[in-house]
Length: 123
Image (cartoon, rainbow, N blue to C red; front, side):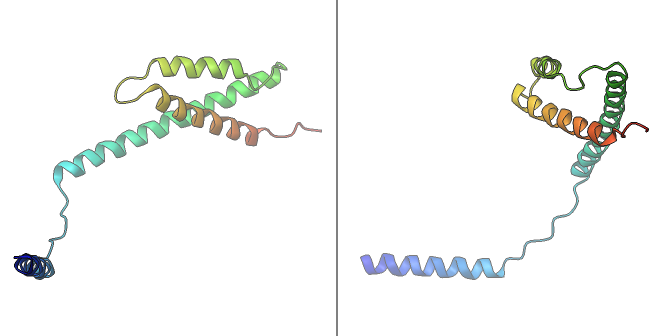
């Protein structure tokens, strides 16, 4: 009986290999619903990018104001408060940690842009 089982397994394996080698998978065609969803994402990405650019312009204005008025540019307490406020507004499917990571990155990049935009004072 063990020889028959081994032979049966070998035959089934051989048959499956033969079937797999003769199967062709058609190319995936674009699904209109998927394309519509991707277009929605593209549109949202454009709007997010516009808002980020607007936010950075305001950050640059804040930096200019602080420099003109001899205020400290980096305010860790303000950053902490902003992150706490935003994390408390996290709604499903976002969680507070995701919101924190997104805005920490946005704040870091805004600070980097601000540092690069500071021109040395005229002589």
